[in-house]
Amino acid sequence: MALTDEAARHLAYSLLTAETARDGQRTIGASNLSNGCSFCLASNLMGDMRDTPMMDRVWLGRTLGTSIHGIFEQRANTLKWFAERHPRALVEQHMILGEIPGYGTVGSTPDLTLVDERHTFDWKSSTRKKSAIMTDAIGRTHFSRTHKDIKLSEAKYAEAIRDALYKIGGYHSQVQSYMRGLNNMGIPVERGTLVFVNRDGTGYFDHPSSGGYEDDERVHDLWVLSFDYNAQAAEAVWDRGLQIWAALQNGAVPSDFARHESCFPCGQERQQERIAA
Image 1 (cartoon, rainbow, N blue to C red):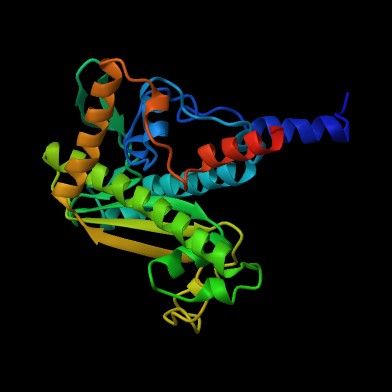
Image 2 (cartoon, one colour; image 1 turned 60 degrees about the horizontal axis):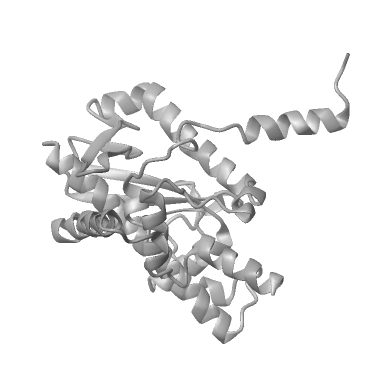
C-alpha cells in the first residue's frame, strides 16, 4: 500500500534525522576542547554531550550542514582533478590529539588536510545572517547593520557581535587543535582555514567568472577565514582540557565550572528557566 502524505513526511524526517557516527559520539574531540564554556566542556568530559530539547527542535540546519560536509568529502575522494592536484590529501582522516590520564585517548577528524601544502581546512555551515554578523565581528564588513533580515537595536547588535566572537574563537581553537595533532603526528601543518558556506544563499557572487567575485562589498555565500599555526595557543587549548579533567577527578562536578554567557545550550536552559519561573 502506498504511503499517506503524513507517512511520507515522517519518512523524510526519519531519514534526515537518523543518527550518524558523529551524532553518537560520547567522548570528546577537538570541537569539545575548543568550547569556550567550561561548564559544557566539563559536562562533555563526564559523558553529557549537552543535547537540549531546543537543539532537537531546530534540527534542519544541522542536517543541512552535515550534508555540506558530505559533499566536500565525496568530491574530494572521487574527483580526478583533485586527486591529481593534491595526491597526498587527507580527507576526513581520524587522528589522535593525545591521551588524558584516567580519561583515555582523545581523537578527532579534520575535514581536509593538504599535506604537500601544509594546510588544513574545516568546513562550516552558516547562514547569510550569521555570516553578516561574523564578518562584522572580525572587522571585515558592515553587512549586519544593513542586512535586510537583521533588525537589531544597538544593545542586541553588541550582544550578537559578542556571541559571534565567541563562536569564531571556538572555531579558531578547534583548527589550532587539529594543527597541533597533525604536527605531533609528524605531518607538518602551518596554515588553517575555516570555509563558511551559507546554506540559505545563492552563491551568485561566488562564481569566479561573474562580476562581483572579488568585490568585498558584495554578499558572498562562500567565504574564508585563515590563520597561521600557533603552537602556544593550541597547547593552551589542550592544557585547559587536562586541567578541567584533573579537577573532576579530584571531586569537582560540572556545576563548579563557569557557564559562558554566549553558550547556546546554556542560554537555552536559562531561557527555559525564566519561562518556567
